[in-house]
Image 1 (spheres, helix red, strand yellow):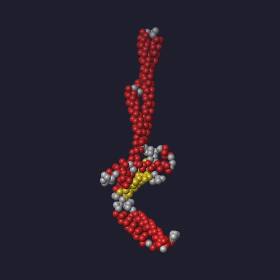
Image 2 (cartoon, one colour):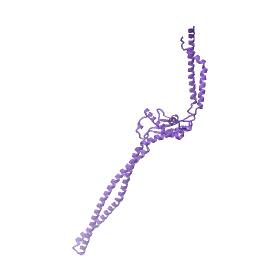
Image 3 (cartoon, helix red, strand yellow):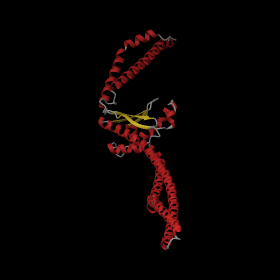
Image 4 (cartoon, helix red, strand yellow):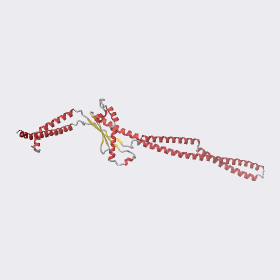
Length: 364
């Protein structure tokens, strides 16, 4: 004989057995409360690191920040979750109390690193029984993550800096060689003293020319008086001799002045050429040295830069066990379990009620 489900009867059945539900919930809450009090307390400290875009004139700065770019920043989680870094932290904070605990299981238990969705923030959380140690560990991991990232960025620029340093050394060496050559040229081929000698020769030749003109005038005068007596003839010979000496001296000074002027011109030309080369070498060295300084100053800034924005605080409340959550979960589980139990009992009771008349009829 078939009987349909009666919701009113089902509700009445549950109401009549409310004590079962209350008892189950009370026992579950008390059990969850007691177990939560007995469990060791764990404290979670969180340090926050921001991933800043590349600095300087990096071409990627012109690229708008997209969801794909933000998702690519998840690779920086590898810096914080590095096994080598966690081993250093475990040794620093004495986290491995026995040799049977593997470093992998310890890391899964203690460390949690996540890049917040659609942000440039990396959160590093450390969970330990000591709240101060948890905060120190989170801050240490954040600091080392920043340092590791910076070191990797520097390593990527190291080759470029090495090439710049070599170019600066070569330019400095070339400049030193030219400066030494300039010093030797100034010492061995002076210009000022040679110019003074030329000026002195020109002045002396001017005086000789004046004396030569006077001597030639005297020669001409004594030639007119040579018919008058022996004195005039004697003076004529002396004036002619003096004029010849002065003329020879003038020619000698002229030749010396021309030679010295040619030497001076060559020295000036060599000086000008060397000075031009020296200026080019000096400008080249200054440019290379300035580029090297700029490269050294901007080293590590051609990629994303990590910076700690929050070292975290010493947690005041334990992260686990979560007493309210555990009690609430126990209450909910007990409520569901007791309702399921009563529902099964209701169904079983209904079946027993249906089959008893049928069995009596069969016996009759």
